[in-house]
Amino acid sequence: PHAVPTRPAPASVEPARAFRPPRWARLAAAAVPVAAALAIVVLWPKDEPRLKGRVSVEVLSDAGAPIRQARVGQHVTLAVGGSGYSQAAVFAIDAEGKVSQVWPPAGTSSAAIPAGARARLEPGFEVTPGSLALYAFFTTQPIDLGQLTRGLEATVAQGRSRGQGPLDLDAPADLAPAATRLRLEVAP
Image 1 (cartoon, one colour):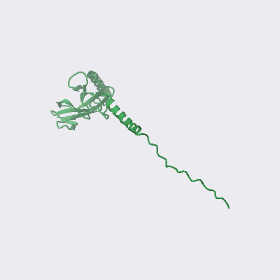
Image 2 (cartoon, one colour; image 1 turned 180 degrees about the vertical axis):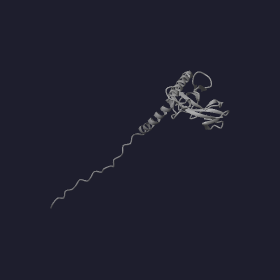
Image 3 (spheres, helix red, strand yellow; image 1 turned 30 degrees about the vertical axis):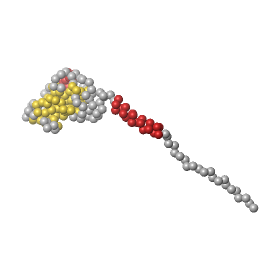
Image 4 (cartoon, one colour; image 1 turned 90 degrees about the vertical axis):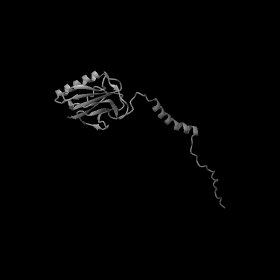
């Protein structure tokens, strides 16, 4: 008779268990990103701009609506969007090329503006005859208004030498970290 080979009985195999880190390790792994995000919020410098976007200048009617046309005698208010900048100054150039400080109404340097997408600049003013271009300059530190006035006067002179009218000039980019312009048409 032939002997039938026998196989040894298979050893009992336990199913593989997935490695599971201890509970304290799982909690620490979850806490690290939360702590990092909290540190960014708490430790972010308070004077550093956070709001991003474009700077803006607007003329608002008494009802608060932005306007680009006004009539002589109408009461209006300026509004700016600082896009994270904390200081502003607004100037006007009339059709003759005369540069005038509009806001702040007094002083020799730019003034602090409220944070937000649209900050009203008080006091408002009454519209006088003649269309004009408004130029708003934005910085994080006060800037000398005389420097801005001289820079705008030079911009008007350069524009005239190229045949451009005073109301058609772009906002000079070299006078402040950010600048914008708005043309206001004034009807009699």
